Image (cartoon, rainbow, N blue to C red; front, side, top):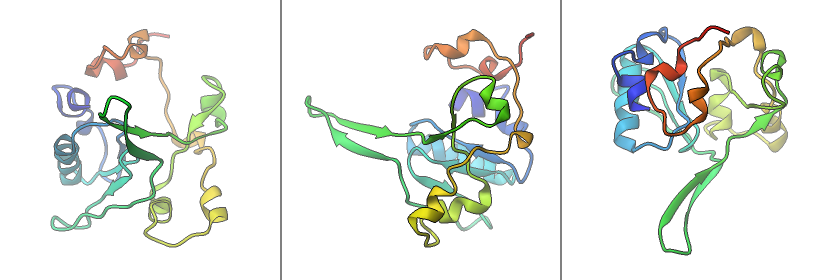
Length: 163
């Protein structure tokens, strides 16, 4: 996360004000805070579904957190704390169907407060949010097969390659 978001060819420089950065990593809170602050200074919202937190700033002095989570901490048989989470998936939209038979649920900013429990909603209202994101609002480009190896972690992973 640090290299891709804050490194020399950092992604934070290409996200437009009003945009959204979703962090699916399990990084330290200090690193997440640094990224959040850099994005907030550029007018970009950050959603952190892995830790269950939503950071947004209406002004320089306020930040909000939400709490509906799909994860938990538990102690392993060896006595170590393990942090686990789930990424909720749904049927793929037209764009993602070319790549896979499912896709992660992507929530539009106007639904975050409901999803994260800041506004009350019943189970049917929450379930109604678990739909494919509109393909027209997404972009897709071919990337290196290096993406499939967790040992690789550098900005070139998100660069387009010739198809």
